[in-house]
Length: 332
Image 1 (cartoon, rainbow, N blue to C red):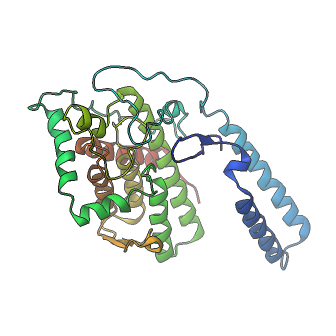
Image 2 (cartoon, rainbow, N blue to C red):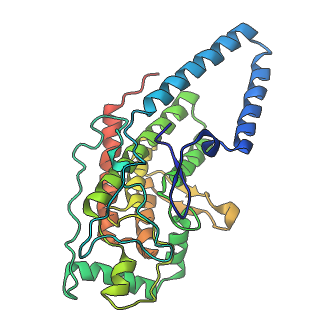
Image 3 (cartoon, one colour):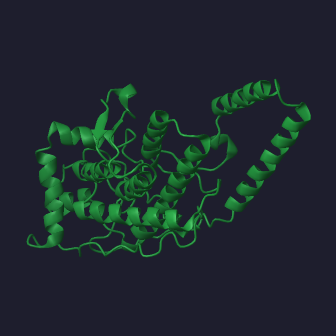
C-alpha cells in the first residue's frame, strides 16, 4: 500500500517504488512459493478453479492498493521546522532532516480509532535547574552515567535495528508470531490476531507523528549538550530524526500489548526470542503489559526519551487498541 513504506536508516526516505518495496530476491521467493502452492493445489482441484481464484485474488489486491493511494500520504509538501527555545533541531551524530513530518495527516484505517486519545501536553520547557523539565532531562543524564548491564541490554534489545530508528511494530509482530506458534490456533483466529494487531499499530503510528509535529519537543541530547553544558554527551543509541514527544516505541508498544492482552489474556507468560540469532538471550515476561513497560523504559535507558513521554504514550496506545477492538467487528 502507498502508506506502507520502508525507511532507509540514515536519511529516512520512503521506499515507494515496487522495485524498492519488493527487491528481486524477495520477488523470486514469493513467486517460488506461489508456484509451489499452485502445484500442491492442482493435485485435488481443477485448473480452471485455481485460475478463477487467482484472478479474484488479484482483483481484491488491486482494489485495496488503489484505495490505499487515497490515504492522504504526502511525501512532497515541504516542511519548515518552527524555530524557538526548546523546539526540535536535527540531532547528532547524523544531523538528519526531520523524518515523516506529514505522516500524521494519513487517513486512519478505522474512523474514530483516535477518539479520546489526545495526549496531555508535555512538561513545559525550562532551563531552570529547579524546573520539572530540567529534572526529567537530568534523570536521563544520570542514568546514562551509571547505566547497569541490565539497562543496557534492555535498551539494545528494544532498539530493533543498529541505529535505533525503528518504531517497534515489527518487534511486536515477532512476539505475536511466537505466541501463535505456541498456541497453534485455527487459521481464522490467527488471521484475526494479525489483522487487529496490524490495524492498531498502524493507527498508533499516525497518532505518533501527528503529535510529534504538534509539539516539536527537543531531544535529550540537544538539551544536555547545550543547557547542561555537556557538549560531548551522546545517547546510547542514535537519536531518531524527529521530535521527542510522544515516544513512538512506547505508544506502539501500548497498542500492541493491549491488543495481545485482549486476544490472549492479561497474565500471559511468554519468552521473547526475537533476537536469539544475533546473540540476545530470550527475555521472560509475565504479561504483555510488562513487556510494553520495558519497551518504553528502554528509550529512557537509551538516552533518547523522557520517562513521562514514555508513560503517557503507552497509555495512549492502549486507548487506540481498545477503540479498534470496539469498532472493528470481525465475522467468522
